[in-house]
Length: 224
Image 1 (cartoon, helix red, strand yellow):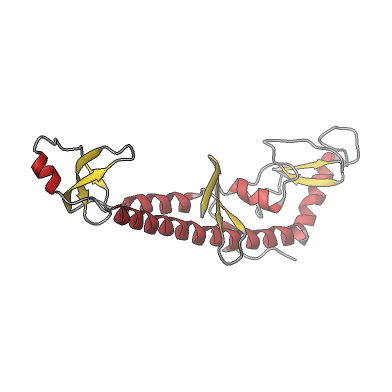
Image 2 (cartoon, helix red, strand yellow):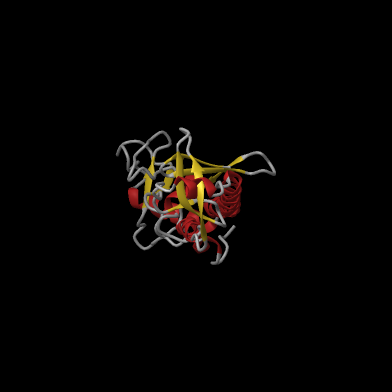
C-alpha cells in the first residue's frame, strides 16, 4: 500500500518482505503517474440509475456501466413514476473498480520502488569502490597539495579529509584545477549547499534530479 508522508516522500510496502520502500519522484515516477491517470475510466457507456447518498437523499444520475461512477449533473425528478422505475446504482461495481485501480497503482509504485532500491545498491557499491580507487587517491593528493595541508573549512587545522563540494561530475571530476573538492579537518563541518560529507545514499538522491541513473552504471567501472 502506498503512503505519502510529505510532498516529496512516497513509501510503498513490499508484500514479500513487509518492509517499506521509498519511491523517488524522478522522471520515471512522473511518467508512471501520468500514464496511470490517463488510463482512468472514460465512461464510454452510461445508463440512468438511482443513487442513494450517505444522508439518505436520492439522486438520478447517468452511471458508467464499467466503473459505476456517476457522470454529469443530477437529473430532475419531476416524474416520480419514472424515477421509481429506475434501477439502483450498484455500489459493488464502484468498489470493485476502485479496488482494481488501487491495486494497479500500488503494483506500479512497488515495481518502481524495487527498481530504484536495486539502483541505489549498485550506486553505493560503485561510489564506495571509487573512494577506494587509485583515481580517487590521486585526486585527493592534488587537493591536499592545493590547500597546503590546511583545512579549507576553518583555515587553521590540519586537512585530513577530501570531500565533494558538487556531484555534477561525479567519477569524472575536473582534476586540472581540483575543481569541486574541499580539504577539511576530521572534525570540521564546512558546507556548500549542504553537500559535504554525504553518505552514498544521500549523494545519489541529490544528483538524481539532474542526472539519469544509467549515468552511474553504463560507463567503465571505478578503478579498484
